[in-house]
Image (cartoon, rainbow, N blue to C red; front, side):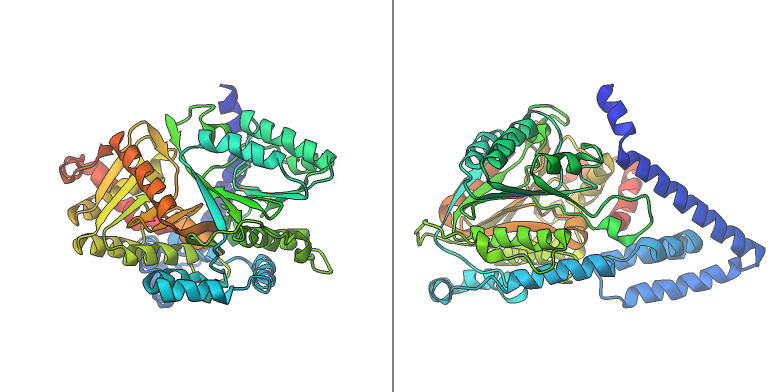
Length: 509
């Protein structure tokens, strides 16, 4: 009951209600004006013109189809909604600031030519998978980096605390969700100790992601403790495009020596201290070595925008040398932003699917696919690649789970195997291919991650960690339900219609 009251009185709910009221009032005003001036017969004409405009945009085909259907079916409401909030790009101030930060970051990231020559000459096919983020976003490929994979939040938590305690110079943290509880309390105690010892601690959290979990003035409270804290993209009860753009990344950097990323946010359900949707399955990876510098830059890029310092922040003070020396494997940390039009998360997923010769296993909480990913997965399965996807059995958002199920039939009929994680909710965002490539990060297989959010991941070409992800995946599907084509045919007709509607409208969510 206490948690329910907390949710109902949260900023997220209040802002949501205010936005719904705004949509209603604007729609009523426009509709009454159209009736008063006898313009209703013209709305269908304007709807056609607007639908034509939508289809000339350089956007995902599914996205254009969804908006066209809505506009043509409900010209006044659909057209108005499109004009108010259909843009995928950030507004000028936010776009300019984050783009400048990315450019500053790119100037500090340099590809070691010797590492790339070893990769290109010894592994030419694999080099092509790394080339995308190197050529488009200037994210280098590294060696001299060690990896440790965590199969759950429970494995991650104690190691994470121990590494935080080792910090001597700085700690950078960037998270979508932080919630007060055992996990965050244990982290906060370490951070306060480190601040007292002279360690620089900087924190960024997404204001939407934490709207239901943290008080509005929480950043002020942390700043008073000496933890330099910023809320990304302040949540406001306004129909503005930038409310769609969230910082979904999960990054911790310690002294430029160690970095953590993955699906784990800093809240108790991620480490199963509380049960919300059954057992919470998640994953994370720890990097130690030269590749951490890319994570340091990712954080500083966004931090420099939020801090709005003039003159620019000196990144060089944070480039502490690494002592890790190993030639095993290659890795490439990367980030994605809706400001550059590159859709890095989507492109990396596509490159991995197209690279697969034997198998590709995907962990995802949301299977809301655009046409490109759907076609690539089907083609891979039809080419004889073993394609398997693990999704939750107990969802955190029922309407999104219905969208996930709407994709089942077409994928299953192509030979793709889909498993629902029976113990609870699968929140991991992993891809593993042919015992060679492994991807761990914050990127979901859905439209929001591909087009609207700031995301990050680390692409690793290393047999040992790829085998760890493979074994974790195979262990998870042993506890999961394998969905069959027959099940999709037995679905109640009204449920099937509802899923068809969600399938068409998925790009709008």
